[in-house]
Image (cartoon, rainbow, N blue to C red; front, side, top):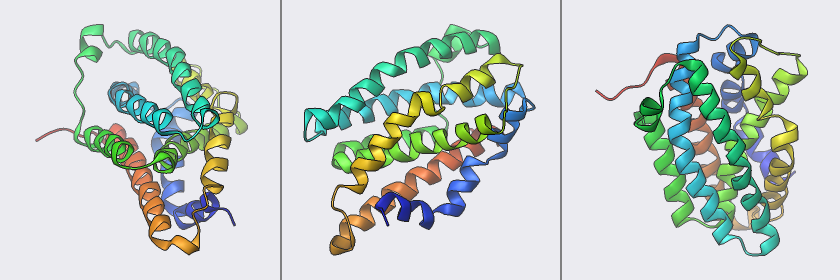
Length: 222
């Protein structure tokens, strides 16, 4: 069994809790209150800055040009997503002054600190593991919603957010991440290395779940 398959089985319950979070289900149904999505979107806009640094560090640490190319391509693909952010903020009533000055909530700051620190201190596979969870989880819930025919009509951003995380956008990247991790030679012969990858995988997944929780229930500094 491949390493990514083993890790997903080991974390199946948490993966399901994150991928089928009420935030995701209600977004697909079009019943998610816009104030919750607005809260989520402002924090995701803040978080993407740390994600960009993580991806860039991955490209810099890639052992070959071929390994780094998909990450560089992914960075370029974030341009259209930024356009979506701008349109969505207008639709959600968030001014440029508001989203430009948005501060990270405790969960967003902790999540961002974790991925950037791991990218700085870890190696190429550590970074790919982070991205496999962040992008693979989003691809998973987007595929579920698309296959179920979920096309919320209002607000329009809900359907767009589902589409931009579907297989046409993320499928190739997630396939690359999975293949590279599975062929990195990390197996039972090096238990300490596998344990570290498993820790990065589970910690990233925990933060993904907490990110949904923070958006759905609120998360503020005392």
